[in-house]
Each structure stands twice: as structure tokens, then as C-alpha cells.
Image 1 (cartoon, rainbow, N blue to C red):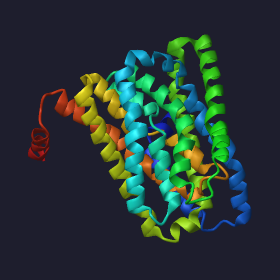
Image 2: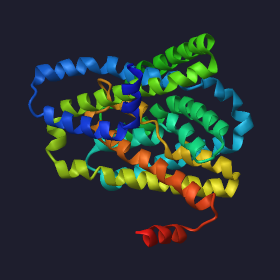
Image 3: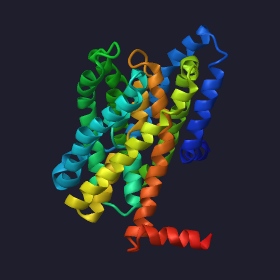
Image 4: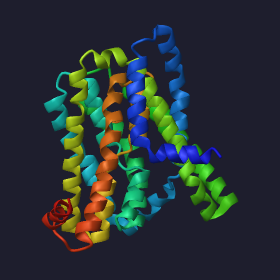
Length: 337
């Protein structure tokens, strides 16, 4: 019975995030330090609710298949940890020069690539699903190792950054849920089999979405006063996000066309343009580092990323697979209107 509401929550995650963001900012204007403190203590358990179910759906054993998909996986690593950080740094300096908290949010988005939707969109767009699954596992493991090194270089002088604190947070919000999720996955597969496990996966996504909803609300409520102190600057945060996603999408498309097969290029695009916003949000919202305001760009990224995946899928279906041009498709739309 509870599965249906959770699946509906996941299906409507964009609207859920918008509602949680708005509600958190509104409620945060009326709560005192005592309520903020209680909300702060709820963060870690809510983070576990958000990350643990997501980890159950990730098969880390795919890492051992990297040799079979060296082309798309290698290209995804180059884009995700070579090109994406450079793009993020450029945009952060252009838009967030005076606000390191928002810059950190953008860096977390850029440095934690792939998500469960990487596989989903790849399959819907007719891409190489196996390559996408391997890329998810490899990039997630790489991000855990690389993230503290990059952040040390990028923000060490801007805020009180302690790499050891970040490693502790990665252990709490990534490593422990990853191990627990992997053990749970094995137990469920042993008991229910592959088909039974597949039927359970949407429910896991719904529980994770519930965690996203709660953590966005808590983070916005705690930092409502500072965020709304300059509402225009906060709203403008979405501009560099759109630019970041657009640039990475174009780069992934160009590299895929130049070096990979058609189906592999689709996997590459989704392995580079989809970011793991749940983990980025978990790190940003965890007590200590980073500043809580860094949650805002990540929350807004939930509004940008799903439409991007849908647009590229429609491009594949309506233009690439049918051998049409963009002008023909738009001409047909306007002709019908």
C-alpha cells in the first residue's frame, strides 16, 4: 500500500523539490534557534534514509566489467573529472566570485557524476545500457576518492575546509550506506530473485525521494534568513547551473560522436550530463562542512537535470532515429500549431 505513494513521490520529484524548497524558506522565517537545533539533529538520519535506498539499486560489481566498456567509461572519466571541474570553476568565478557557499554547491554537482537516472535515460534513448551501468559504478567509486582532493585545491582558502571532516562525511553519507546497500541488495536478490528485485526498485527510489524532500526542507528552513537576505542573488543561481549542464551535454555529445559507436555515445552523454544530486545534497546538508547555503544550487539542479534528460531523449527519438533535422521537427510542430 505504501509503495504507490512512494512511487508517485519519485515520479513527481521536480514538483516535490520545488514545494519543499518554498516551504522550507517560508517556515524558516518563523522558527527560532531551538527549532533550528532540532532540525539540525534530524539531518544525519534523514540523509541515511535518502542515500541507503539509492545504494541498494547500484551494482558495484559492475566495476569489474570496466575492461569490456573501456571506451565509454574512460571517456566519461575524462569528461567528469577533467572537463566538468574546469567548467564549474569558470562558472563559479564568473557568477559566484563573492559567494563561496554557492560555488561549493556547484563544485559538488560537478564532481559527483552519474545517478540511477543515467541508466534509465540511456535505456529510454536506445543507448548501451550495460556501458551506462559500468560507468555509474566506476564514476561513483572514483568520485569518493577524487572529491576531497579537488575540493582541497578549489576551496581551501575560501572557507574553513578540513579534508578530514569531508572524509568523515563521505564515510557517513556514502561509504556506510554503500556497504549496507550492497549487502541488502545481495540479500534481496537471494530471496526474491532478479525479477522480484526489479519490482522493488521503484519503491527504493520513492524512499530516497522522500529523503530528498525532507532534507531540502530542513536545509532551506535552517538557512532561510541568509538565503532570502538577497533573493535576487539566490534566484540567479540557476543561470550557471543551466550553462553547466548545457556545456557538459554538448561536450559529451561531441566526444561520443567522434570516438564511440552510436549506442555508446548515448551512454556517455547520460553518464556525464546526469549528476548524483542525492549524494551532493547529502554532503552539502551534513553538519559541519560545507556552509549550508551550498544546498541551494543543488536543490535548484533538480529542476534542471530531469528536463535535460528528457530533451536529449526526444532529440534521439524524433531526430536521430528518424533521420530528420532539427528544423524539420520544429517546422512540423509550428505547422501543427
